[in-house]
Image 1: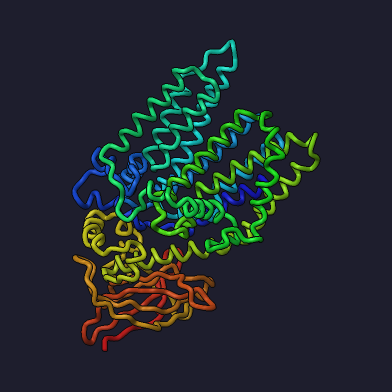
Image 2: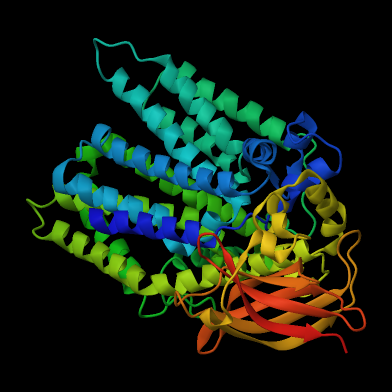
Length: 555
């Protein structure tokens, strides 16, 4: 189980590395838009400004670092997301030992379950979209806040030791970080106050959490405006069955063979049912690892609360919206904690209920195996997402206003009109190097020419584009074709388009062309009479080389 969890971590890292793009995606464009509009990305007014129903103070600091130090290339943000999940895994694994007393086979199994859930590719959207640092921060802060509270409580149980107030400070700071990373972070305040009351901590400790929660929530709601198009939470409560369906979709879509139609859970969805049915047999033994069990229950309540407030605010988008990839980070954490409760209880119940721990392990291994069979599908999905961003990047670098390609990166062309000139002038994102540095240069000064027999390809379809999105994004051509590196038996890394031997356009490779994935989408400026554009496959050699694949003449 530990090996299965670690392999899941490696798989997610592979997805991050092979599908990452330096182009912002959807909400990520606000990272550059704020600077393009002449505002500082670290100004208090911008940090405090609402984003939908959220106040993303902490995530915006990461966005500002990526903009100021790394030219908004997204790699820092993607690395940050992965590191946060690694820290979350480390914290969960450490709390199993310190708060739960787990060791040996139980600790290895628990760490494997946590690794599988925290890095499961069904949440790949959060691993491939730099803006999504806001989605992984709150669960990490929640775990950190709960662990700090329980460490303080365990010290109060030692008569000869004065509990450290720094654990309380850490718990409050972590909860504050969660509240100002995403709206669901504010759920931690009532949970922390209730936990302090349940653990019979001193009244001043309970009041500290209550006061901090009241102040944080009051500040959060100061000048708060409900986003347009979102459901009214109070009106949503009048449709409890619809809210329940949304929450069911939120959690059960993490499992295979889920249906969002009338039958919410199909008969083949047996594994979660097994977990839920056998869990009561393990519950009486949770006292064996009470502090860690309290941590897991608090996290489960946090996940349930997150699903509930999401449902009440987003019912207007339909129940199917609950199945989006980014929500799986919370849903998988819910199943992780539920599974760990069952796993720990089953281990300590072995003297009364024989083979329960073995059954639990076999169920988890079955989940791991099903996940492995579905991993290829998830990889193809994310490769499709990566190709869409590569195509949009090629359109931007060539200066062609292609609504289909650019719409994949952001749906409103007004964003490109405002932001792209600023990105070019400051060499940000896709304009900070790589293919951007080749534009306007003689082909032979950038690439070595190789024998055309080392590659194969063809130009197949040409689409004239007459749109204009503002300065630097105007008419041109979108050219579809295919290319293959014969010598190395792989896809070319890109397509280069030249006029008069100067690079004037680029293209993205990796498009699905049944039964192959050797298709490309390239862009060229509009051809003037009696001109021609020449297309080359860029081979991933050292140094990179260009291989001729075809020429397009003006009609």
